[in-house]
Length: 277
Image 1 (cartoon, rainbow, N blue to C red):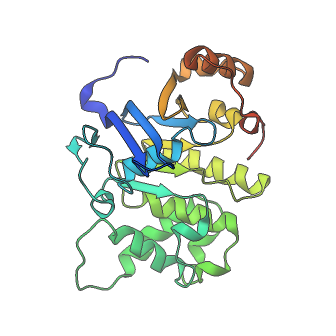
Image 2: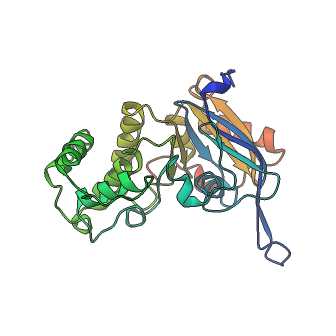
């Protein structure tokens, strides 16, 4: 990786481990001393087979799980290792696999966006939606090209899966978090819609000058999107490539790089597939 200034570092993970069901027959070491620096405007794609630790890594960043003793998580210059998930909301925007998780179907588009704006702030006794916010919402939605800016009062449950996930993207970025986490956010979408949402993700990340991490099961997508690629195996980061290194690679080249770094044969055919998902 090209050296970058510490002042540009948005995320620092130092010796981060996570063990589930410790001391039982079901004990799993999901993360094993992972170290990672993510810098301003990095768009990092994360690849790895099932159980590699990809989603656990994002959950540690988001504060869903506390890491093991000795781990350290720094976001935007602040040590947040002991912060609960709600305290991380000021730093982290996230889009999940399912659009239903990141949006409230019984609320309107503007109500969802208002909640997203307020989630990282202290609650105050004031209207959740006002004229100024509506204009901000319209501007944020207009760039999607889906016409949602003219449907602010529409219940979110009436939107298609792709529209709802596009709304979730705007919700995750409207409060300008330090980092955006995309956790297999096209996994439940059909290939055509998945491609649309991926392109929208790329547009929003570029437009908002976001720092982002995207988990995917698809090597072809990991090579196509982002300026940096990491590959995980057994809770560790075994490959870390800059854009200059990955842009000329094929999926086969990436498999070879993994096998050289991991010291074993790659066995998960499910993430060799090309296409949207």
